[in-house]
Image 1 (tube, rainbow, N blue to C red):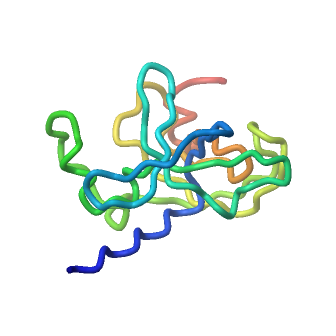
Image 2 (cartoon, rainbow, N blue to C red; image 1 turned 180 degrees about the vertical axis):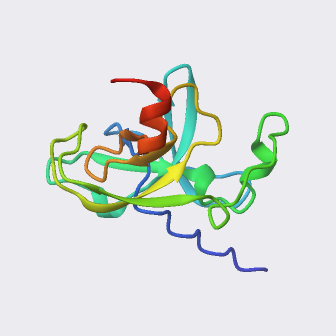
Length: 148
């Protein structure tokens, strides 16, 4: 019998979801890892339990199992266009002294270039406290987009 590889630890900056108390664990049909199916909007997604985020209140959180499952691509609906890997993606560093999402100071953060931008913002990052998106525009983008 072949040992099932332990899922990779997901990166720290990602969305987390509440796992309601009483949600029963299930097994991923591909890798057999323990997952929790949680309804998010109109669909349900499998979540990996995030042990580090367990709070004293009894609330538990999870992150998408699609980020850690070795066979996640087989469950994709349709084919997706090829995108640059995170190693190939353009990044920039920017100091966040007053976060518009949480009001905190985050110091220097890595922002990623948007592949398709509908407005003058060309870069994004996630607030480390709320996991909500932060948008950034460069000086050239501000000048091109006009006054704010």
